[in-house]
Structures are given as C-alpha cells and as structure tokens.
Image (cartoon, rainbow, N blue to C red; front, side, top):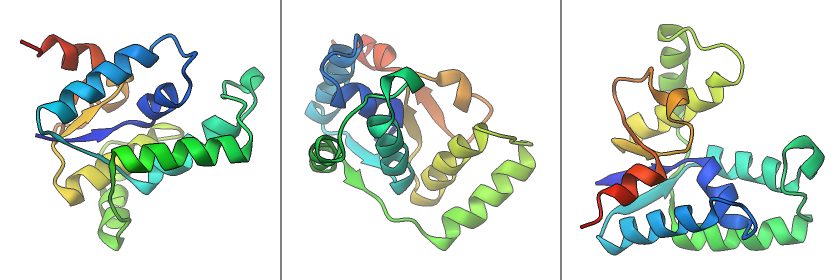
Length: 150
C-alpha cells in the first residue's frame, strides 16, 4: 500500500510536545516497518511551514525558521517527496468543480489531486471528514492504522 501522509501528521511529528506525537510516531513506524511507501507532496511542505512558523496564539507551532527548516529536513528524510505537475493542477480544477469545494477544502482537494495523479490510493490523516467526499481514495486515521497491527 502506498500512502500519503497528511500535513496534520507532519506537524505532530515535528513537535514532541504535541499530545498525539507518539500515536503518529507509532503509526508511521508501523507503516514503514511493514514495507509501505509513505509520500508527501509539495502542498504538505508549504502547509507544514505555515503551521510550524505561525505563532502558537494563531494555532501554530511558533518555530523559528531555522527550527522549522531542521524539522523539514527530518520529514524529507522520512517520506518520499513527489513532484508537482501540470496534471495535478488540471485534476485539482476538476475536483473543486465536481465537488463544489469552497474555501479551505480546496487545499485538501489539491492533496487528493496529487494522490490521483501519482496513483496513491490512501491518505493517513486526523481529519478524515475533510476527505470523505472523495470516492477515489481510502482514508485512515493514525489510530486506525495502529488497529491493523497483529
């Protein structure tokens, strides 16, 4: 199984004080340990940077640019970064029209577009409800990933 790792997992991996850091660590270790391929897209990187460098008062991690860059290097070492392509843009346009995406859900549509173009069938996210509208993908939370352990 190939999986896309949603940005909300990346932010929890980056901050050891996040309550769900250990759940994400365990889920990622389990997936990688059983030979799954875990991907991220440039969209994940942009979103990670925005959250990592945003002040905690604005729902961010409050990292300096240097700290965010160091965490980003760790993330890039853990997951395969797939390229943006013109096909992703075209697929995103179809998705936002077909699913009538407005506002913030258009960011999620871009991740789904990348999944479709790169043939990644599954996303792991804490925000399952944000992706449920897309019939082309399978969605797991980190908790559901961990339930698959023998």
